[in-house]
Length: 369
Picture 1 (cartoon, rainbow, N blue to C red):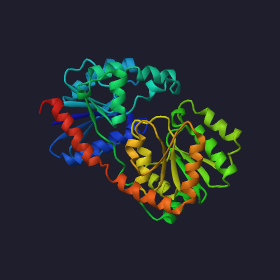
Picture 2: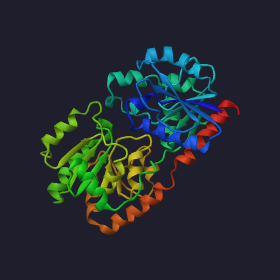
Picture 3: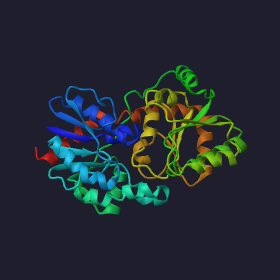
Picture 4: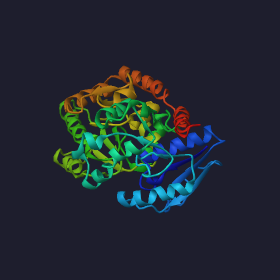
């Protein structure tokens, strides 16, 4: 089978969908050496994203503007002459004859439209047309599948749920070793709470900052707060709030952290907090659990589905719940050890190899093979 995969987004970001695209392609190439995979890459991407004998690269100059994209993308995909074309960023080449698969990670832009810019809203506005034109849809969680059925009326039999997994590099290591590496790179304190994700409204960082202020004032616990992630849209309020709450001296913004440094960051942290209003999957908590780091997450969308009983769940609208959960993990060594063990076990139940097999089954069904 010859499979085309749209990897153009990786040029703009390695996080999120870009990481999903790379990990899935690597797993597919390893599991199916007899099949051929062609990555449609942005022409400015100088290197091949996945190194394998059965993976080729097709440089693309397709414009990113959504209208021009749909004018040129179908023609480009036709040149690939593939049996199935997979769009991990949910935008299939419209008017293409042939078999198309899309992955939908979340519908946050429909559920929380106030959290996206006008440009983003126009781009994501293609979702209705995308779900109608694709031959099959992969959802990364049952939560996202349910949203697709409920909000867009997609028949259940056109959706297959395939969970993501943590990068195999996410593993436990001695904390002293991890902390030494992280401090050499970022000069963070010895003791810190961690947040990892794009700085944007959906991640609910304001609630985390308010909860952290209360932790210091009312509970007299003073670990630092470290936030790792690129600055996203509508993020100015977060930085303003740090100043308003007088947290500048104990709050550290690292910016984007390279994927090979993330395992050290997770292992060095006392706890990861992910209080997002909504997630299609929640890869960051899974990565932290794979490193043995206790996790606090919101009790909404896909997050309970991912963490199972291995994390503390909080209401993202209740700052005090975040504070109490932090206090519990930071002061109860038995709870900390139990969460570490449960997290490692839970993370091990997800794998890219399984995701590759399930995805190939979708490709073959769509191609009629």
